[in-house]
Length: 214
Image (tube, rainbow, N blue to C red; front, side):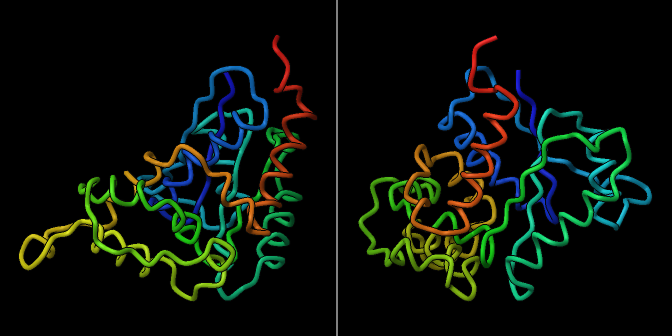
């Protein structure tokens, strides 16, 4: 069993779990995978510093591999990488050797869910819908200023709902279904940030021998 923990800024980032599991299996992990999202919100005084959150996540969600998700947003990709690397240098001996991979979309993680039209329709609850969905070209997804708003708009359109029924539609919930409905994330290899993520995953798998049967 390979256990991995995703540490992120918010609960909506749990949608990345299926994608990360896909990356591991696609790149050769040969045994069952147990994904988990580190929910530190219910702690009386949750840690604020990233390295402290990493330590607490490992204590509450023991794992063999940790993914750290930060949206690049206005800070920029390299600054987010630097922030994570600095936090790693502050880890105590208990987890200093834990394999860690950065997950940093150029804008927001929603940009990585704008490519599968049928999965969008499935998640909207209207799999046979024929509404026209203007999905952006995959290579432009990382350049969209507000991918979250666009993704929610597309899900509403795909639902085919109108009036009161449309107001009752909850795109935040549909996004989680969307992640589960995507079976192949390979189109994201057109994006530089995703290619970096996959390369890092490949290195970790080979270094730890997770691509070999025990």
